[in-house]
Image 1 (spheres, one colour):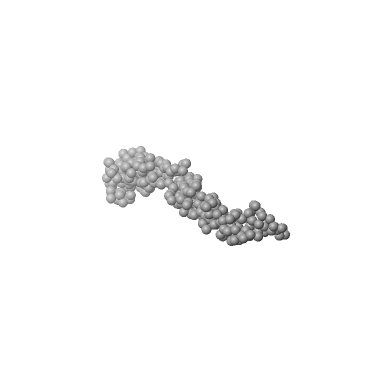
Image 2: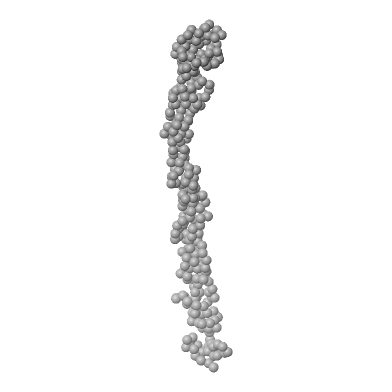
Length: 293
């Protein structure tokens, strides 16, 4: 049996299970329902087509190009893809940040963050749309003086160490990811000097020991110096025959600090300190000298 199919505008005859056209096949751009309808034996998107047109962004039903396999850019739905040779493809140059990549699959490729492109120890890749850039993240630092805050540029941001402004007279601090410095007042910073307000500027009182002034019987002199005893002494007495062992002045000096008062209450006599309230007696007077601290 043969009939004229008004839907397909052709004469068909019936074979077991289907109708088959008996007129000449249609040219490219004619509507079709099966490959047998077309001279090209290719029916795509309802039209006889010039190629198989099997990409994910090409079609044969584009108005103005019916029957010709044509790329359709709008079929690619990402923000960094194009339709090329019938398939959607990523275009990295569309992404404008320093840590983004154009990634995806099928018909959708979009710009996305890639943390691996940020190479510091406290940076993250953040942004939106076509632009993702490396940025500092203080939360990745430990908020102490050795790793206080995050700073850098480009693709490298690192945790920063706080500078030591005052040296021995202070120490760096970190609070809320901001550096500071604290004073270490009273700390020994030089011979006979201590710290004040970040400066090594305070002379310890005369007579103080320690603070790099540690030799036997040496004392700080109140001006930042460490002074030996028996120097610049007022009222020196001459060593004479009444000194033990008939010492001369040169001999007193050679013994080291001989005949000097000790804290105003003891005197050096015969290689030992002995308590004396004064140096008035003839026996001791010639052997008594004051420390000058």
